[in-house]
Image 1 (cartoon, rainbow, N blue to C red):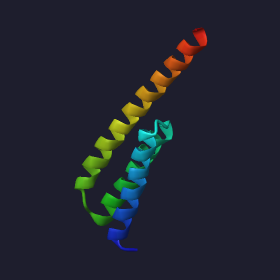
Image 2 (tube, rainbow, N blue to C red):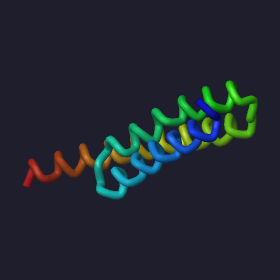
Image 3 (cartoon, rainbow, N blue to C red):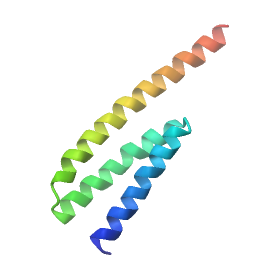
Image 4 (tube, rainbow, N blue to C red):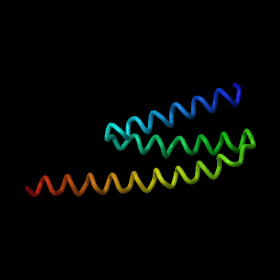
Length: 83
């Protein structure tokens, strides 16, 4: 398969993650994080090393946001139970 096909597929997977995030589903953050491993592999195979920086940066952002989202959801759930 061509490198161009892979970049389109990875882009669509990433957009799916953002779409799910917009629908307030934590799985969107998880997909956004998982696709970064695929972008990292793509960067190495195609020797497009700039994607490594982007992949690590986006992966860190997705990890932090997923953790924050889950903590907020847990505290909201606890607060609702206490009422």
